[in-house]
Amino acid sequence: MATSPQDTPVEPAVEIESFSQLDLSKIMLRALKKLGYNTPSPIQAQVIPVALEGSDIIGQARTGTGKTAAFGIPILEMLDPVSECRNPQAMILVPTRELAEQVGQEITRLAEGCKTSITVLAGGKHMRRQIAQLQEGTQIVVGTPGRIYDHIKRQTFKTHDLWCIVLDEADRMLDIGFRPAIEKILRLCPKDRQTMLLSATLPPEIQRLTERYLVDPVRINCSSTQVSVDAIEQRYITVRPQDKLDTLIKLLKREQPRQAIIFCRTKRGTDKLHRILREELAVFPQFKGKKIECIHGDLNQRDRDRVFTNLRDGSIDMLVATDVVGRGIDVSTVSHIINFDIPMDCDDYVHRVGRTGRMGREGIAFTFVSADEGPQLTAIELNINKLLQRDSLDDTAPVSVASAPVDSALRSDSTTAKPQENSHAFSVNAEQADSANGKRKRLFPKRKLSERLARLGRADR
Ligand code: AMP
Image (cartoon, rainbow, N blue to C red; front, side, top):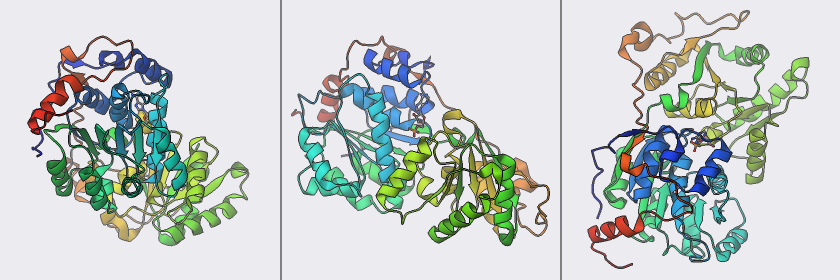
């Protein structure tokens, strides 16, 4: 049933500098103003008009680019009131419980001023409470594929009124093995729907998924790594493995971070560093009273939730973490990222570093590199098309560059990797930039949905 993505991008005609240029209701414009969102981010400027038209979308964008609002705003604009439809109308699938909570919260903020019922269906939470919420009537469901499929099987989540499905962080969902659950869910959803797929990367597996489940998708590309790490100063520090802890303490003393996340590779390493760091820093007056916490996949859900809440409200000063927090989680207060262990995967680097400098705020990231980790540093630099700046702590004997194979094609010949052009089009067709409406309305179904149904050979509904 599906066809390949439209190759022609949305024709840019009008620069989008303000949300009022998009065809949004007054209620929505007020909510955006209250949130302090003045200018649509590139992904928002491109996705919102296309989504309001009812088209399927493949959006390539990393986290921290404002993509939640990019799909959340059009969904909210097109919802029927819960009094008219008690079953979920929109479903957002995300890879992790934390991201589900975060997306639910962001959409709740965007829904300000218009009674909206949003239910988060993620694992690790009480099933009974979720069932009760679904029975009360809900308009938007956000959740992880495993738990959502569970509810569909039990028939506590009825899918027949769904008209919009979002697959957020699709590449990540496939990475962690959710493909079978996603496909089962999609097969149990109405065919006459709008599907938006958001992903940082589009590997062949994702393309196969889009070919099977999306109809004439419009492709929107905001994938440049600069979107998430451009505003972030990125440095590396060469260090011998046995000096890592000392170097970390010196770095923390020098930097006095407002809030830092220190990334480790393993759960055990995270626990150990957390314990030692608390002991070691306690003797320095400048760290007196600082709250140092840790997080990794072995923590129970309640502790994970507590740590995230405290990180967001600024009551945690330093967090020692595995990549659990590296993906998708939006904490705007983090000033410093320290890769105590260099990430093995280049994408993990971008996700970790992207925890700071959110939406253009300032941030700095340090990566510890030992003598045998030069190739990893090189791979990261090639991936982000940028050289990391070397840093050293005055009285730390640096590992000689000659012994550390950090010299790379990039370093010896920086012309081999030119930074990518940041070519985001902040624009939509002039005719789409219409005046704001008094109240929420579903914009697409009358015109667009009938076309979609005709294409699918279905005229019913
Ligand atoms: P996301 O990529 O959806 O996780 O969003 C990243 C952060 O940007 C969140 O804190 C949002 O609240 C914030 N944000 C989203 N859109 C805008 C905007 N247009 N202007 C300012 N901040 C925004």
